[in-house]
Length: 269
Ligand SMILES: [Zn+2]
Image 1 (cartoon, protein in one colour):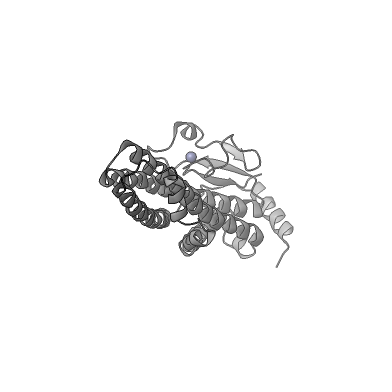
Image 2 (image 1 turned 90 degrees about the vertical axis):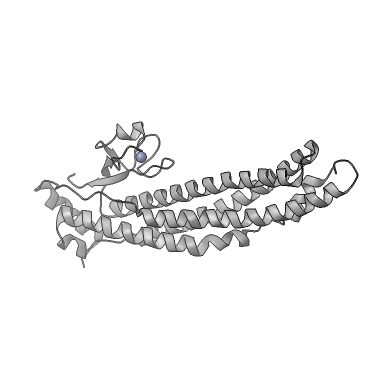
């Protein structure tokens, strides 16, 4: 098997003598992304429902007393909701691993198809696989996933406790408080879905970059999904050429928040 640098030199030599054909556009596996978003939202929901039950019980007890607002209700609730353990957030890992695996497989196959279209099927045989880089990206994805669930819990414990105090001071009945908590939970659910999808897109983009760079590709053509949801700024970029090391100010495709654009490699260099 030839060394990586020999292979890349050979690919480049061959490419100088031919025009790059139309390459297949990478496609993020949307079903995987959606399934994962549902899993992350479910983790957030399960925590939230449990927290709401605890708060409602404690609030009801407090209302039954004849005294004024307890000075420590907020602090007390935070204690009651329990310490936010990393261990708990780790529960998202199996779903995250499954999503990562599916995203990686789709990316691997699709980048191979691009290489094959550009260089012929022989080029695929000795393609270097950037294992260490891919492993780092996987760890980053899994880590971000756990961190997000952990952060969301921490944030909602604070928001829930604040809401309880606010409603206690206003003299709300328990049903009113419960509705406010549920509304707040819905906001967290939507946000969880958005973030999970964003993390999946970033992971897909990072894998693309790692695989392209491992075969000596430094430049790419910015490619949008071509639908009406593409932001104007990225629409204007469609078809333009950038380098991975010097991307637009908001990053390489997939890096800007909720960006669904992809990189189409430029081989003829
Ligand atoms: Zn975009």
